[in-house]
Image (cartoon, rainbow, N blue to C red; front, side, top):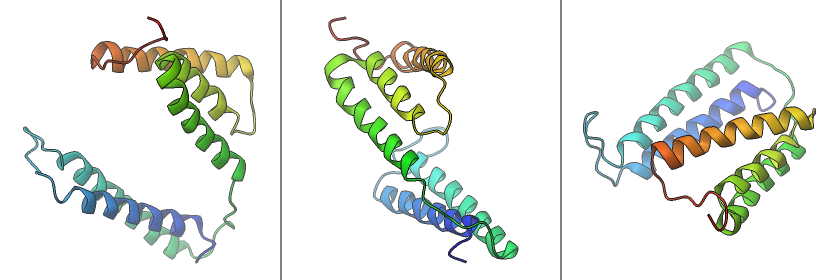
Length: 146
């Protein structure tokens, strides 16, 4: 069972879901029309819990599965990308932080085509700026000095 990806993913989702529900229990729940601070983490936690239960049961029903191996390269590059985002955003602004994050994160994959990564970086950065800066009016500095 420990080598079954569905079982391991199911257990992980169960734990994350329970953690979200447990972490939100001290806050006011509210209603669907007037959501309190606990509403979203609680609902998301239960959705993750249900998904985890589904995956766990499916993994048990299927029995064996593909051997689980850790992908150390993706883990390292995604972690590095998050650290780069946090470092760059405070010094250079949102757009350079997004560019750094996307470029480092893309290196986690097996295929790295610079042209595709640059187009994806431009599109996703534009989308993030549109949503967070213009639609939600969050006070991010786009580029240092502007």
